[in-house]
Image (cartoon, rainbow, N blue to C red):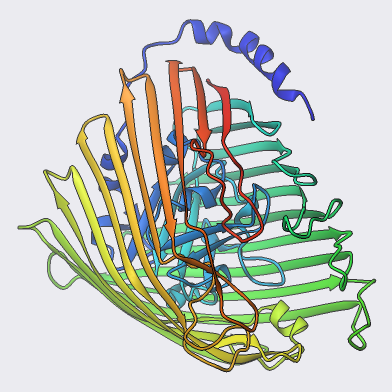
Length: 629
């Protein structure tokens, strides 16, 4: 294990001690509930709209919330939201999936500053290496959003926004260490110098986790830079890079002592934001990203060592035209080209001839139009359509109708949406399923809900009922083929609470009830009427945060997950245990430049697995320091 953290602390103290000693008294910042009350969201309509008037079911996770709970990965931040279920295959670094309203990661679009980042042969989003460095906020929009975000937005959208530099440049460096030989160092800097703004961050994580061959190493960097000659134009670019090396111990029933998985990703995303007039603005994004994976030796007994490559070029153009005060027309086009391939030189030929190299090429061109109307005060109505054209299976048409109405007398907002969505077959479905003629999975979904603010806006409640009907679900026929065999239905209830009874105390709570059922008998993986695996029926989250003397922030959070089933291929699913965990965190601000922090994860030392056979970590304690200048 490297010992960088041990020399980091004394060196940092020597460098910054003069600044720290002359620090001023800290000043309280805007509270989390006040910040959310005043916030706007982009992802619900593709342009700024007040959160309390959103026509879609939306949640926002702020950078303050992430920092106070000492959250390192986006997946852990998502655990507090209703309608979202995180399933991690054991420990940090292992495959981490997110289910939204009972639909898997490959049916959900993930964006970084407007750029789709779902990758790999499966088209899913593995959240294992998506960290919180340089994040300003995370917006989660539930329900089909293919009309404005295209493929894989069948379940909804998770959009991650990076920070944009403003004001005098500043920086932060931090380091921590703790259980399981864990060490992490990270830093961030942002600011604006004349017409140039920047925000950059980098981090390194080393941990051995709890089992043999379970080590995880991750290095990551991100930068958002821009040039603004005036208030109407910004030309900028996003840069990201990450490399992770993970030991893959497999299940506790079938351990693999030497399997390793290496993933390297990078992305560049130049963009232009131009507002020539108050009633017309344009956004243009060009992006290129690349992913490399090496799975060696991959002791699966069939495929053996593999190397996979994935590259993608995307162009996204959008303009918002406001011909009148009550109408906004949002239109644009989208282009994507994906090349994916895998080398597997030692694949077994026991089941007939198997290729040692497989590949897939996908091209997509799309156009969309959305109208947002505000004909009377407090009423927002949205309607739109989109056509996506693919080289492999032709065109797909989607639509969405949504609206919200705020009742000032009761401080209530009613919201509802009806929409269609689709998720194209992945390269993995086409290649490994020996079927180039698959059609996209489709969804018809609707929801209705109410947001209620009480007690002079100190309490905010959100309650939503949702329903999804899925068709063309891709499944297996037992002959090593994938076909459009399946159908499924998901429905349930989402509830969220945010309360601030006194200035320095904030309560959060969320609850999800989910009924996710297979409604087709064609796919042999599960019998008709079976509950979809790894989708909990009940999830409850709660947290409390308090700031003592404007110096010490303490946070306690807990989660309870109930009624889960694991897939038993070809037979009835089997139940897996309920679980709960409690985390606590604290940070003491010595002065504006120096703070000390610590946390304990899984305080009660709960023994559980989110995926059967892959145990989560037991009780773990971490501590460190943070310097700002």
